[in-house]
Length: 352
Image (cartoon, rainbow, N blue to C red; front, side, top):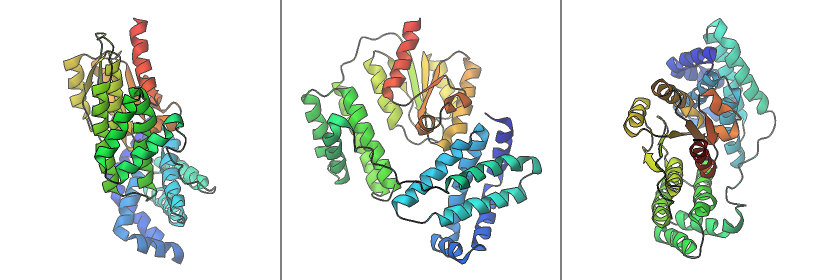
């Protein structure tokens, strides 16, 4: 982590709402067109949204990685593009936030924040496309993935589950169904929510169906003999999602590992207690989004204090998007999918 950036991030955390409100006032005094957009958005809603930008900026500063903040701005611009909405308000927000911080932060803290916001504004000078479908090109499982998605969106749980049962009975492997159907559909549900094609109720229902399907697939999984090794898996504090690490846990179990899956939003101190209790050969942490990066770094630091040589793997979208980010938070490696996570674990065994 970056010492100077961590200091600035703490300043942003402590006064985030005031900075967001100051930014809102600046935006309201800018061009009439932008001021109208803010009024349509709602002042309080705008302040809350700007606080999210500040949280992402704080994570980027703490990591010393502007790409973390750019990832957030790109996601938002992509969302606007998918809805054919203007980025004028976003541009004005970043510009006014830049001015607000340059006027409010201590002199030595201004350059780093100014640089990151400047890079974000520079990125917005080029069009950012809408996100592409996650299941448009998934090979031989394309039709199954789309049928499963439709069943979920129509609220037909039993139909969705039958599709998976039929695929297993027809010889599809659990690993292929994990990677080519379940993961892709879960990602597509997130994309559809992002671009406004589905609402939160549909996305949550879909996640519950996916969880049920994972239980079904686990019951049909042929596991290798126990290898005497344990992997502990959890989502770090602040990450409320745990489908990814749950799927990875099942895949480790298929390879003969004892899996200790602790679920979502796991506080660092309690995770340390879990390591003391279960003595894992490795730990796998789901980080999920950029807002969880400092939490992940704190968790890893706590684990290193307990056991410096414990192998720690991280997973989540930020590490796939930003090369080497996993090193910045103190992990030993990252996995972009379940296969690479299990491959890392197996390499630990074979190295002994």
